[in-house]
Length: 116
Image 1 (spheres, rainbow, N blue to C red):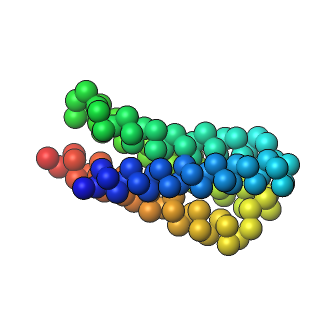
Image 2: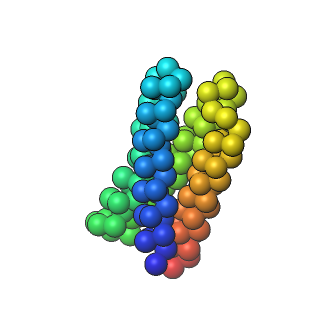
Image 3: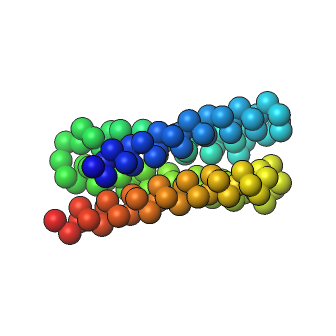
């Protein structure tokens, strides 16, 4: 069940990253940070998708930990974009809320799995 939730959350976030990337590059002429955010933001879901067919429990947890690292990096890039005034506060708040939910969900899954 949680696997479906994190898959959906991370996929929706990746789609938002695509839209944000296009906005940042087309409208705000920002290419470096937007590319970094696009890569880390879409990598979260890619690693979650890989975890579905993990070869072992250790591989499964490793993929989710990589997703967690990518989520943390995405949060960093969002903060940088806000502080450099390339993101409006409202945009940041919405994206930050999404990434915090993803991080919390990943932490919960990793912790629960580790207790088995």
